[in-house]
Image (cartoon, rainbow, N blue to C red; front, top):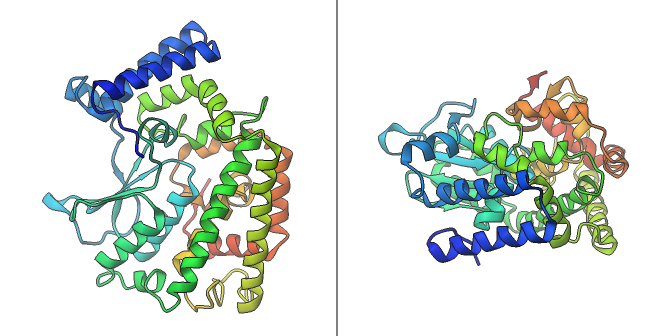
Length: 364
């Protein structure tokens, strides 16, 4: 079921939800005012009818800046770049698609939003890929890569080795396992990063509250609504329910075990550590989308090695200026401990090697 904001009924439902939030969480007057303003602008953003077009586009539309990737065809109608990728600053699923498109040399534009607002207001999350050539809109990373490979493999042969390879059945099994791993990372991470007195900088940075690529209106709304979003997520996702958090942690460990076994089986860490791995998780000589997806998801656990303490930002190719704020915060002990655990195992070393040898970095 998808939530939409089209029509008076849906808008009244949204207003009722906000009124309920205000009454339950006893927001201050200034928070209530910003909440209502945020609802007004977001409703206009989705319906594109409540504000004059010029104001709507100027205040709410993301600045569409092409990613610094290779220039390649095909393009859509009227010379536009064919593919438009909706993203948010910190999203492991978006990063896996972004990395695959970059590695294959597919040209695209990246439209960055706050992410969390789209999930709460529209019922969908990122990544979302818009194909101007076919009119398709895809919203799941595996489906996105299948579509791009089917459309563009003739011009970008790397897509054949990334997606259309001889290990499709095994890849599907891995894709499900790694997707569950990604959801466990989200649940385990938010459980500690949205706990009582946890530093909010990471979550605000993840949701684009400080990122120039994100529209100003969205940044202001995220900052104003953070207390309410925090309470909602803690309750809806059972972030402080210990059995649920323990289950997520168990999923992380099980995935570590499975990836470690694959690395040992195919000798993926052999040779010079400064060179790309000689073999990959499916036993292939070139990386597949499974390798990129695991490394992208694992990167969220390896903040100090790929974003925070590193002199080069590998994650997202250093696209987001707001990542600099993460250097100012101290992460919860549980988050630091899971990073240390990952780096002590082959799976974490494999992810870091993938980034440092196959992902362009930006010096900081």
